Amino acid sequence: MKIFRFGVVFLLSLLSSLAHAEGTMIATVLQADFSKDPEIRLLVRVVDVGWGPDAPSMALRKDCLARVKSSDRPGPDPCFLIEITESKKQRAIVRQTLLNDPQRSSDPIYLEIVYQSEVSESDPTNHYGRSARLKIEENGFYNWNNETKQALADVVWPTLPSGTLDLVVTDADALLNLVYRERMERLDEKAQKELRETQRAWMKFRDAECLPEAKSYKSVFGEWSNSCLIRATIERARQLAMAPDNKSKQ
Image 1 (cartoon, rainbow, N blue to C red):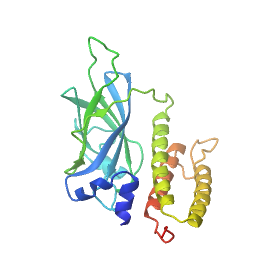
Image 2 (tube, rainbow, N blue to C red; image 1 turned 135 degrees about the horizontal axis):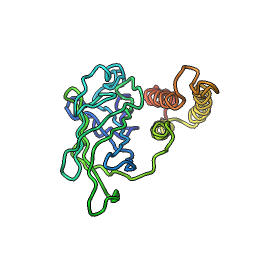
Image 3 (cartoon, helix red, strand yellow; image 1 turned 135 degrees about the vertical axis):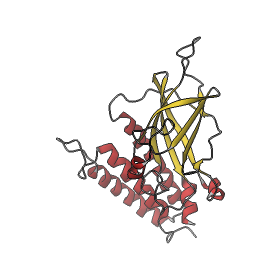
Image 4 (cartoon, helix red, strand yellow; image 1 turned 120 degrees about the vertical axis):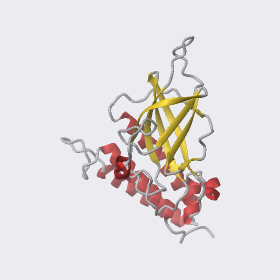
C-alpha cells in the first residue's frame, strides 16, 4: 500500500497497472527557454512509477556517467536516450544535464535538455503555442506519455548561474507540499498538529543545513546550496510518503 500511496501523492496512481510494462515513466516539460533559438532549452521532470521506492534510481549519477554518449544520448550526463519531435520532425539533441542526484526510483529526476529547433522564416519570434513530443528511454524502459504533445511554455529563466537549480527547488517544494497535504488529510486532529510542528522544525533544520558558507558558498556537506535544498526536499517527501499510518483517521 505504501508504494501505491507514494504514486497517489505524485499524481501517478493511475499508472500502477503499468509496473511491469515498458512505459514506466512520466516525463514532463516544466519550462522552455527560447532565448537562444533555434537552440531550445527544456527543464524536464522524469518520474519512474514502475518500481518500488526501495529500488535504485535509473539516473544514479555514477551510472549516467558510465553510459556511452551518442547523438541521441548526449552528455555531459548521458543518462537517457532522448527523442524530441516538433512540427512532425525529429530534432537533434544537443546536450542533457542531470540537475539532481536521485537515489531511489521514486525520486524525481530533473534534466536540462537542449535541442536544435528551427526558426520560422515568416515569424522568427513566434514562440507561443509551440509544442513537442518527448521520449526518454533507458534499457528498454520509457515514458508512457511519449506520444503526447507537451506545451513549451515561453518563460524568462533566471539569468544567474544557479537559475536553473532555483526552478528545480521550486518544483521539488511543490511536490513536497503535495505529499504533506495528502498525509495531513489522513491524520486525526492531534496527529495533524504534531506533524505541522514537526514540518516547521524540519524546514528550519533544512534551511540551516543548506545555508551557504560565506567563503565557499557551499553547505556544511560541501554541496552547493540549491543542490542541498533539492536533495533534502526530495528525501523529506519520500520520508513523509512512506511513513506508517499509525495515527490515521478512523
